[in-house]
Length: 128
Length: 128
DNA sequence: ATTTACTTTTACGTGAAAGTCAATTTTAGC
DNA sequence: GCTAAAATTGACTTTCACGTAAAAGTAAAT
Image (tube, rainbow over the protein chains, first blue to last red):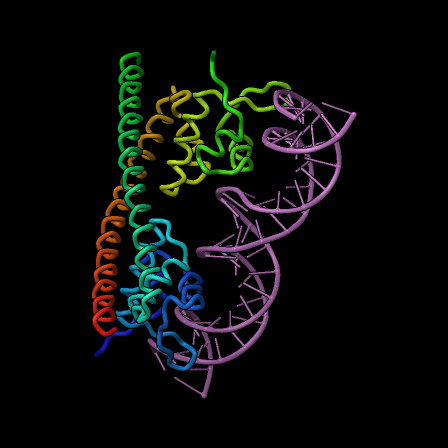
């Protein structure tokens, strides 16, 4: 047992290229095992990839993602580092909340666009 | 009356560079007036910039933003175009909803990180 | 008149995040 | 054991969204 995934299985599941996953490894985001030179991805890697892609979708940079991952791996033991981290968390939180507002506003605008479309369609529809 | 803004006024207000605003003009997102060669921004331009930056924050590309702006300027009169547009709107909406979920999940994770930090701080605090 | 503070255009540069291509292995299926 | 499919590395290329530097024009204040 102890399931392994090949790289292409994961590229298919997540809709990314092999280059992308290798890139993430080069960048130190994931550390798949090896059998010879071939990468073997464990469920934990798969899960991590999922989180990386989520971070990517909301606009985190690779190094921001790496930073978060490393905090999970080993949270800083030193006082100053901890405080710095907490500041960053706070900034990120504000950033994400702003993004949420932006999204909500944009969703509302999309509703407007759609309504305008429907109106237009009705006009045209009647005319023909 | 009829207020004008200079380019640096706006860069200061929005925290972007002059290069950015000129770039947006090159890309056809804004069309400030001119006195001689100097750009004069009207309130409408200012408002548009605000929307551009909002689009940017949630990860729209320049051409996506341009597309939205042009829809506002003149909504397509042709049936096929309208339907295409509505499809795009629908896709965008799904995309934004996904992003909102991503954000909520990440906010929850940030809470975890913060709690871990606080726990750590307490441990260290007690020890010293 | 000169300084100071902006503003302009043109053009090349940059960093992030991959994409693409080529030239080898490696592995799996028979 | 062979061959086709899959995986590897490495180098080069691309796209996006500006940054940066140079050279020059404008405008108001001193």
